Amino acid sequence: MRTRLTYLLPGLVLVVVGAALGMRLDTVSTDGDTTEQLRKLEEAFLIINKRYVEEVRPAMLVDEAIEAMLESLDPHSSYIDAESFTEVEEGYRGSFGGIGIWFEIPDGDTAHVVSPIEGGPSERAGLRAGDRIVAVNGTNAVDIGDDEIKRRLKGPVGTTVDVTLRRVGMDHAIEVTITREMIPLYSIASAYMVDERTGYIKVSRFAHTTYQEFVEHLTSLKADGMERLVLDLRQNPGGIMEAAVEVVDELLEDERTIVYTKGRSVPDRIFRSRRPGLFEDQPVIVLVNHSSVSASEIVAGALQDHDRGLIVGQQTYGKGLVQNQFELPDESRLQMTTARYYTPSGRLIQTPYEDGDRSGYMERKGASMQEARNDLAAYSDSVPDSLRFETTHGRTVFGGGGILPDIIIAPDTLMAPIVRAVHYGAFQEPFRVWFARREQELRTEWDKRADEFVRTWEMTDESWNDFWEVAATSRFNLAITSDPNEASIEDRIFAAADVKANRPTVQLHLKALLARQLYGSRVAYPLYNRIDPVFIEALTLWDDAVALAGVRSTK
Image (cartoon, rainbow, N blue to C red; front, top):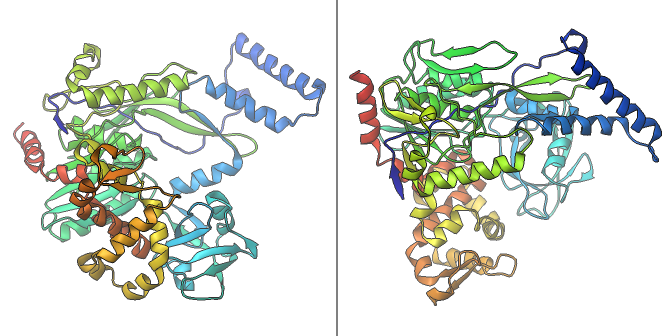
């Protein structure tokens, strides 16, 4: 289903992890009531610590008290303990000390190397896609979980880690010593030419390296002949506001407001485009969905408010709170809301909330998304005048809870039942088992032949039947029935006619999963996009995107 929107509901959202701001209690001006309440809190802590019937851990009491205070505020303020903060910081910094691999952990198994990072220490040490990490520094690594594997493999740059591997086709373990290096965490998951005119860039998050990566890929695609751009922000959880602003600056003419902030105890700030952009005038389509959050909403909101890009997909998450980190004495952090973000037209994208009501907040958010999807006209009519705004060239847009795309596409309404099951991941686990059966054969045949694989590999009847044999086992319980009345996507039972009609689509999805195993996400995304209904539908909308660009050029 595709719904056209004459009104646009943008919102504005963003999570910014700014520099930690130290603050001493004795430098804060407090009134008498605040001082009294602080003394009350201190007295309660001391009484519990000294008089409770059992011994208590003071650090635990303090952590829980801090978390309880934050729980009474907005839905996104949080407490980050010192250990967890290291991982959070790495995600925004864009690098960490490690061995340089992408991996996944099937249930009950150990880490499988999806791909070594190109040029990284693991690649130089000879690790390959498909290797299983069975021990780290001589300690068993089977069934210990994602976080523990990462903890063991990461460490200070220059230190070494001993990794024990099992490799398909070898009957003995492989021992490898790898020196940890600073490993880049890339923000651009995929960038390629869809056709002779159309470029595609998927931004998976906004970190310190995002802008540099974006410019490099944008420049490369332009050199390849790109005349129009699909910017994919789906599943993007946000990140650093400045990175989002810089990306918008390359798509927007000079001296245009991109986003601004307002808070109680911090100065208002306005962020504008400052320089000639690499792609200011050509058509842009921006893909968003319910998991486009924070910084990704800033990008979509700014481009929509200036009539610069056609927003396509589903309503975004609706998180428009500026958050700063305040360091505490043990290096833990308060990640606390200090201001709100607004789009250029003045819209607040943040979904309304009541302090302390986190469950109600999520329920209202889910209801709003469903209403916008199911009855767009009623949803638009329900928006009060106070939440109606205008874009640069006079289109009506709405604030109050996420960005509503110019064109809404609900992907599962475009899919047959079996394709919906594929889209939502029902085939991933049986695929892994099927792949394990054929891994040695596939890796031997297709090693270092990614381009040829994409062009020529097709699933044979034998492989197709073999896959369904795996899928039909009691562990996965995917079945085919000749009786359409027995078909049930909830029970993973598919009508034979549905399976036959959609076999090419399912096989292409399995090919994309295989490409990810053999070569990584860079090769897999172009294959996924061939069967992604939102992406496919978006490619039919260039007339709309061009018309939007025309509105800008004539006013």
